[in-house]
Length: 234
Ligand SMILES: Nc1ncnc2c1ncn2[C@@H]1O[C@H](COP(=O)(O)OP(=O)(O)O)[C@@H](O)[C@H]1O
Ligand SMILES: [Mg+2]
Image 1 (cartoon, rainbow, N blue to C red):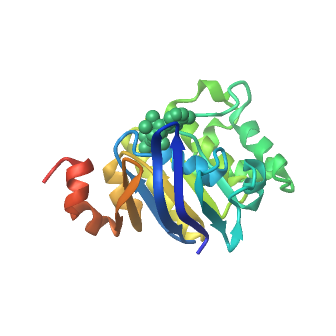
Image 2 (cartoon, rainbow, N blue to C red; image 1 turned 90 degrees about the vertical axis):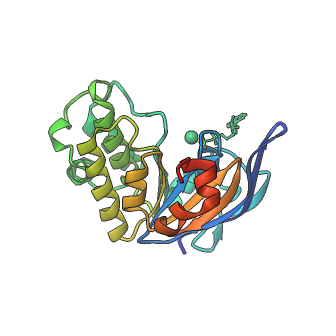
């Protein structure tokens, strides 16, 4: 078990954004989290990466309680993420965006690390481009490369396929399967159902802050509560 969420609840004012959510991420698996807009997916990611503290519940990584650990120390422990809204350094080159992350993480030869990561995500050709000039698809891949620079155990991806074309989405899917094959625990929030069904080993469905279904993609897609709350098809 790489990461365990134990009965996590978050409220904003009177709104329960996340309500008693428990789930576990395992190394070598892609775990999907789906649900309608406002279901609490990003809030749950913010709890895992430490950007917000839950009102109750615990975040455990490899047996260590990280619930009160600040984001930068969590990253050091191996929790990396990308953002729903891209957060690259626009004025830096693609290579430098990744190199800086490798440097901060204390990697040796950060330039080499960065070049290898760009190759791994398949955007070597854009290494010298200014990040602000990238297409959304390429920028999302750079964000993944940057997250990988800290050699995470757990990688959280918040809607990585949004703005990607079909080819880029296929490449992203292959990349995620490859990362899982390397032993990473991947936690994926995504609206593209084809991608989700394709790459996830396990799927959790959030609705109004509560988990309403968990299981293999095939089982979850047939769950009547999920069909009603989210998929909208019989
Ligand atoms: N910082 C915040 N302050 C107040 N309400 C918030 C905040 N962040 C999220 N919410 C609310 O919490 C709920 C869950 O939001 P979010 O986690 O962004 O959902 P999702 O990512 O599934 O679309 C929504 O009702 C949203 O309006
Ligand atoms: Mg969100």
